[in-house]
Length: 350
Image (tube, rainbow, N blue to C red; front, side):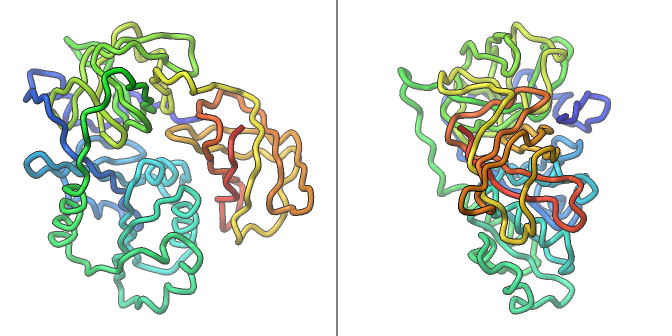
């Protein structure tokens, strides 16, 4: 199951100041989400820590421009944090200290999630020609190699963020979805959740479904980097104060949505595509994990139809808990019992 993240397990500096009187603004600020991978706490040299659990967030802000950095704190011993971090990212920074299994698995995860833009920081005298064979055919092949200079890298990321110019959405069409990554009971405020807007727009006072439960909630307030807003759009890192639900109603991966296209199912069918390094067919009875948004759920393979190509089978999977998704979206299939590689495939969800 996706990990429960109670407040006692979370370092949360903003909890003492967030959702108290904040700077109020009616305009939006561009935000860039960046996964920082390969070297624990490398993001400390780039931003200020905000939330720490199995994944750790850091914030950068310059004027109205913000960058949200996330590191997979518990990776490589746990695979889920790597999936969470990459699934949140528009851009990746991959710090390469050694060419071992973790680097290979990280490259494959980034490829499966589809993080097409990124930077490589090569250390310990590793040369670009040494990693070229390992990144060939993956998204990392297009990443830019940069110097190990956090100050310059910080300015590069802020410059990338400035290119993002979000526009205020159409008031008549603003359905959206926010997968929850952390949640708290804040004294004097009530239930507060953190997440990134996965698609569409969410406004203050919206009524949203709390999937996969049957609950409804009202968005009481919207904050982005300690500023109050009336709305949030795709890519924004947000904090919502909620009315109508308690933290007992929430979990990592809960989706707040007013998008009618979102569905919630416990039996999933879809066409899989195995990663090129996966050496044998998926089989009935295997217990895999499906990663989608902030969900990382165990699933048993109930049927496999290989057709003409065992590397592109049609799968039917049963889950212990409903998966929340938009039909046609992709999920990552992982096999935690894998010895050297735990990322097995992607699957297009029907």
